[in-house]
Length: 340
Image 1 (cartoon, one colour):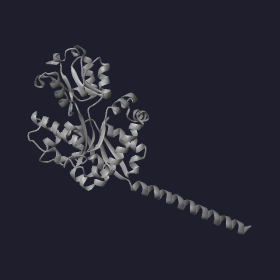
Image 2 (cartoon, helix red, strand yellow; image 1 turned 90 degrees about the horizontal axis):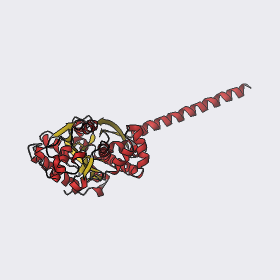
Image 3 (cartoon, helix red, strand yellow; image 1 turned 180 degrees about the vertical axis):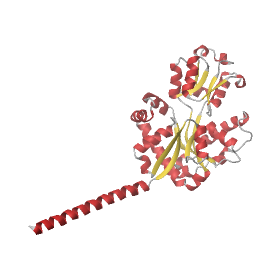
Image 4 (cartoon, helix red, strand yellow; image 1 turned 30 degrees about the vertical axis):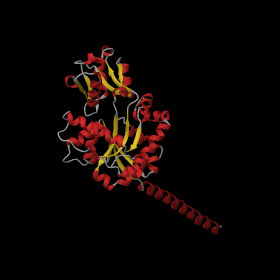
């Protein structure tokens, strides 16, 4: 009997030892797996496609598959995002064309910014110039009207100039109404304190709900929107492979959402509060193009020339000197067609 008890105790101890060892190995494996992921701090502008792709792609395990862990911060506008990049608060972020050329042009002697990929360059297929109903049948009557809505630190100033030229009224004589958010812009429209805005996707639909009329499409006006990914020269030089893997994961995440837009919209609504239908409309309004095309570089040159001509900064510069495709060439070489 004593031998049986002794054998049972020995067997029990052995099983406990095996179990503890197995758990330790499993725990260590999990730690190693986590440690093998490299963190990249991403600055997201609220409601932009890279924010949705980062969330959905992480949930689907796409970024983890490429060895990346995203640590995110959210900003209301491009001006806030670029400040965070320049000061090292985040590693990378997204900027629209006008914000990118304007910031570089105003900080030429001190900037450490570099554009490492396009995200999208397209003629928005949903939206354009929305006007208060009394102007819909006579667009020239907008001349000297209540005001063209421009959100602070954004590309709307450039959009307004394009639409005013298209209509045939002098941009220098138009009243500009600056706002700090989409909500404030909509309030101006509801109260009759503005007359026009260039809006796309779900934003345009919101103005239509206020009774405003889509007077001219962006395609007809020749409005193109360029969205670019930006970092610092130092971060790119030291983390080229990391950014290349980020681009691979971002590209794959965008493809996933495009193939599963309705499902992704439900998840985005639950996470960010964006209405499902608004998400679908906005997502389908983008023509995504990661990498760097010659057309993308020429578009930046065009926007930069306009900004210089209109006194947004004082000295001409070559925007191509602030484009570095080294990471994009590793990630998606067939999508890098910019002339050297």
